[in-house]
Amino acid sequence: MKPVKITVFNQEYTLNCPESSVDKLHSCARQLDQAMTALYQKHQNLDADRISVLASLQLLLVMGERQVDQEVIEKINQTLKSLIKLVDQQLTM
Image (cartoon, rainbow, N blue to C red; front, side, top):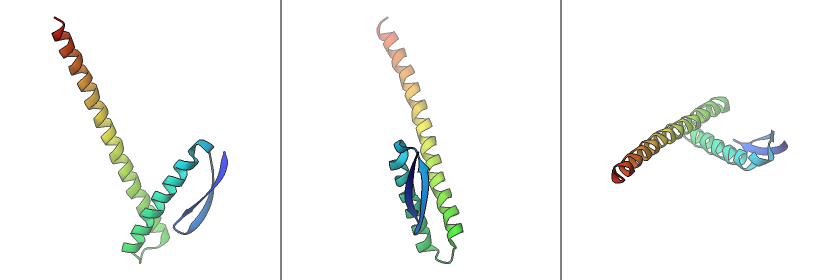
């Protein structure tokens, strides 16, 4: 584990992170910072706590959609493999 400094919404945090995940942590922090900044620009009356919750929910929603997309792609790949196998069997008869 390695202490890593990140900045989100003008606040600095030091987190312990596996060395193999440092780049990913910085990427996630940038995405969260961008989402929070965008929300603040649209809704300046919201406090930082509400902005952080809303931004986190937005990012989780996007991640969930990507996961569903990946699951659909995997099912399509499995179906295609089965169809290719059936076609190959028919061609060898």
